[in-house]
Image (cartoon, rainbow over all chains, first blue to last red):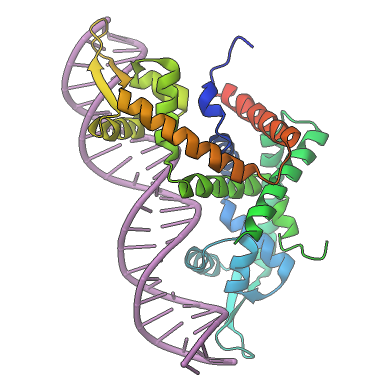
Length: 145
Length: 145
DNA sequence: CAGATCTCAGCTATACTGAAATGC
DNA sequence: CGCATTTCAGTATAGCTGAGATCT
């Protein structure tokens, strides 16, 4: 009550609040030794099986260009393979290697830890509620484009 | 229920969720013609009166370096003045001009609109709850450093 | 032909770091 | 001296754009 260092008027801007929390979240995940994008792509790949880069981009909401670069790295590190789809030669099917699966399991463990650190001050109900509210916002604005 | 395009496993990563919402928030505010940083600084200045850049940086959680550049722009545009503090000559007191105040009122109106657009899918209680949860996270992690 | 996909070469905004200059 | 403040220069990352090549 006495120690309110957050500027009142600025805190009225939810955009500001969300951005700062996002930064903090990113920091926590990075401190756990995880690149958010890599994790997101590997996880999406495991879930979707072998898909095209374009599909992957839609799933992870990542830019085609950045995704292309990232997949290049992952391929170079032997975590994924990139093969021309013979049924539609425009596409390249990206697939997890067994090394990629191992890497994903490793990252998942670290991410779980980071997640716990990030949400530490919240109880189970609050975590659920936070996720619900954020998801609602995302779904709403996603639909509008 | 049928249309669940968000990858299940990725959405488990709250960090990812928060980041995407932050991006959306930023977009909404930018679409309203507002630079988040400029608004934050002007608002903090109105609230704090004439303070040093360092103090301003702490209030708005902005980097000294970036803040310096931004204040340079604002000064060039006649929105703030920057004067050496004679009581402590290391400091420069930054102060809103009347043009700056007018600019702030203009931005505030746009920000209110953007805020409304961003939070449209949430009811009043939900907005309060979202802000409460985010603030709690921020305060917690802020204290830890 | 329209449209999708992959690729490449950039751009911008944001956050941050290191270090010098000045003054307390 | 240690410490705070301002300033400058440079780095890193994320997200994005435009355009060409290839294919359906």
